[in-house]
Length: 620
Image 1 (cartoon, rainbow, N blue to C red):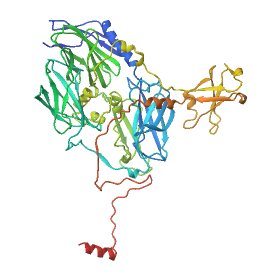
Image 2 (cartoon, rainbow, N blue to C red; image 1 turned 45 degrees about the vertical axis):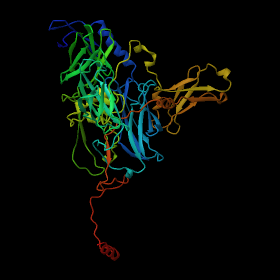
Image 3 (tube, helix red, strand yellow; image 1 turned 60 degrees about the vertical axis):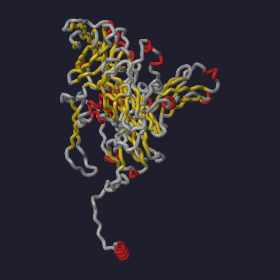
Image 4 (cartoon, rainbow, N blue to C red; image 1 turned 90 degrees about the horizontal axis):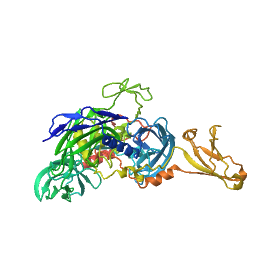
């Protein structure tokens, strides 16, 4: 018998967190709340420890457009956000920006910018020596770029051309099935982490081609070579099927003959265990069913819910065979990917489920202009209104881009919404992330759940000791200040232990300068405020020791450390919708320069020369 488990009172606040504990009494239909126990506090504290080992800053880069020509300026704005609350971060003060050639991932330009209250802006001059192709803007800060991070997320793709007329016109297109057999990568993902014998389970799957793009598939589930359940993918090569696995049976999947490999094995079926399934969701609750094998004894289980490393609520109950848990969505203050982790009576993680909560909690940005048509160089009056989900005005820091649609990069599917809520939260490359936020797509909620079942899937392996392992702590690579050393190379006996002085200036601009004092062994730092003394210009550092001492100055270049660490990291940039090249000659040709003017259709009439008339008659 399934008894509903509802969360009542007994709420305790932990900073910005709530821990809700409930007790289910066997044979009693009502539920009684109890005071949060030390176990709940311990599970909440684990999240705080793990959150400290994650990058506290999230960076989003907004270029002025998506396509550039050489010999022009690439203007950008960088948003540095608190990784948990998405508010402006006040941690880092220096932004390290690089422009990489995507095919080689080698930098072709790099520069430093001051960060003011979580925002930075600047420009990059695109040299004529740059070749045509895709480039990546990559940003790093002291609190976002660590040696122990596996992926680089603070990137943005742009295109650069020597002449914009070389840009081919292309349009998004649906994924077309291939007539021949294709090699694919096909993986299955049990909901919660494991399939357990005699417990009905949901099995998600995902198929991608050798190029990383999704492949639509269909097939059948085999039980000891006997076909049982037919299935097919529903979005971007993803889908799911539900069945009850039996112990001692062999389960495989056979796909249609349109792929090269047609038989795929399923993950191991556990003879006994515990499962977590999402059974229902609406605008008020998410409902889970917890099931365990008959042979397992009655025990207390705990369900912890967190959003970007912040514990929002926790429930506990006594599990006999099955238990239903309803979590109120009002406990989650924001939208995003919530992580529900199920713990057994020994506080070991038994299952996990990712659920996207509160998608309606979003800002609405409305832009209105004072008229429909404008002349060139005419003033445009733009009014912008930002409101929350309740229609109330919101204070916002905005970035506005205005450019011809010709300069939109079709190979860049990223925006601030997809980057913050999806790409930065999940591992790997996400195909067409904007699909999941477009309200025109009625099936977006189901498709997003499939994405979390597959790309967000993971089986827990950590233990209590892993929470305190040294290799999990953030390993800093760069710092806000520039570090260097100054030494006297002559008469060192008289200068040993004496602090040195370094002057920072730019003689070609003004007489402004600043003096920097080193420590007793010659180490000094150039602070962010000093770096901003001459924005966009060089800063000259000069040791002030007498020339008789032959002072020598060395600077630690932060980009050397960034480039060395980046070699072993992977850039998993989102994949754009599949594009097809148009061969229709009626496509409007791109303009050939910034001063070109596109004319409307023109008909030219003139008498043909006699030789042309004779040639035309011969062709008849």
